[in-house]
Image (tube, rainbow, N blue to C red; front, top):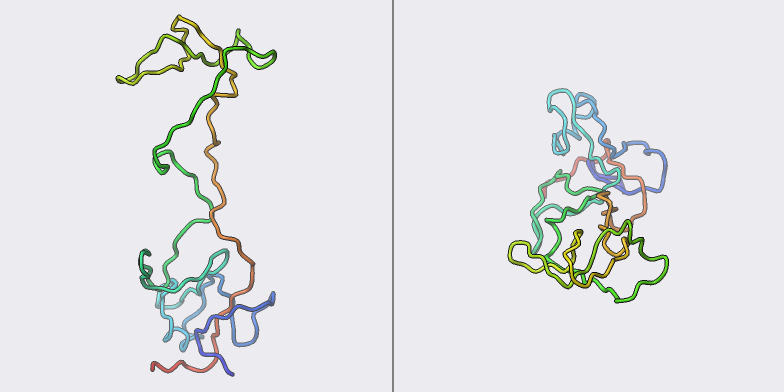
Length: 182
């Protein structure tokens, strides 16, 4: 079966077959690809006068345009999403972390001369909320904390945000049957 102009195919090759070009975001001349321009125009970019851009499916997953139940709308040619994301504190749901401490100090866990925090029987307040943890000695029966027990989590680095994937070549037909409208 002959392909339609503008048809995008997944192919297991490292080359674009005859009548196809790569879906790699390249710009091609309209004057040499008038039928393809009539089908896709500048949906994927280009100036519409001398060139048009091919779809760029490098590192992207194709999806149907439109709106599904509970989904954000997407127009044909939209590029949405990021491969890496840095989560901000404001994007996390409100939550707490429990801190467990004992009354006895085990050798090697705490350097009292360089402790990073204390649990204190005397409670400081911050905005009316009682704090039992403090970096200051508030007096009372203090328990020195292992510095590792109060470290921040994360390193403000991006994490992988893509679903599992298999890399394969996407090519678009530039010379074939002009697709009928109905």
